[in-house]
Figure (cartoon, rainbow, N blue to C red):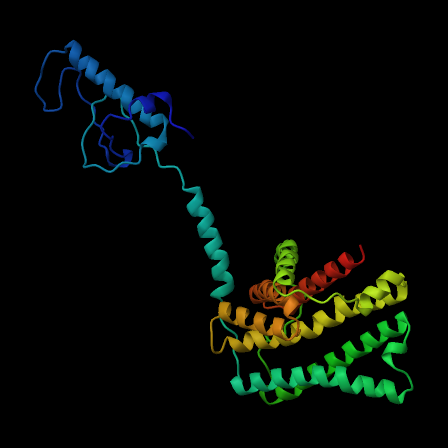
Length: 341
């Protein structure tokens, strides 16, 4: 609120004391501040009226009350007592406080109870990456070869089902490795690999979805830094051909299978495991970097890191894999639908 014209006119006057430090007293009409009786003169009434008018001006405008001077008493009209007005709340400070509390809820939460050491963490991640490469590049092609067909000779639908089979096989291999490596530490505490519909995580997923335009913008920035050679993927070929079955199968691959396997490994295992050695906020960043590097695609590095941070924050708040899986699935679906335009 802007100061009143009266307050602006008094900008050259001495600063008034803050209302919470001023003492107000009732005086007899003919008694001055020092207690000596004197006849009321026009100058005293003028000074009293002027002081009371000046106080009223500042009383109506709280923005003029932010001063600090020693305690003093102020003349008032006979029989008048004025209560000090509280200062207006600092809206900016309240917003910053709320943001700080939200960040504290994410980054200063209690870490997970991690029974294994860095050796197990490294073992699981290296075996998972190896199995991902070995199954997709050797096992599935070998099975296809002995079955009498090759991927490049398949139809759009055949290639879609081939991708689905590869993704499911890679996911099963990764979950099996995780299960075997963590077998000596079972039973685990209830907050490990938690998957439930309960909890107030819906708002977090909604806010995460609002980050999608920013992730898309980061994709454009990343492509400018690392230009990619133009090529057409099998998914894009199926979309161009408008094969509904192939498009439905690819939608399942990118929106269901990939989010489930990746969230179990990176948010379900890696992020909580890192909290044994670092704060949660640092574990979110490190797991996001690992998530982006595991895609082996420099043209998507920036958006994948940012997306990993968002999904990691959602998971850290809820301690539930369902919200991060859902957010991951919605992002992949957003990209898939964007390709269909």
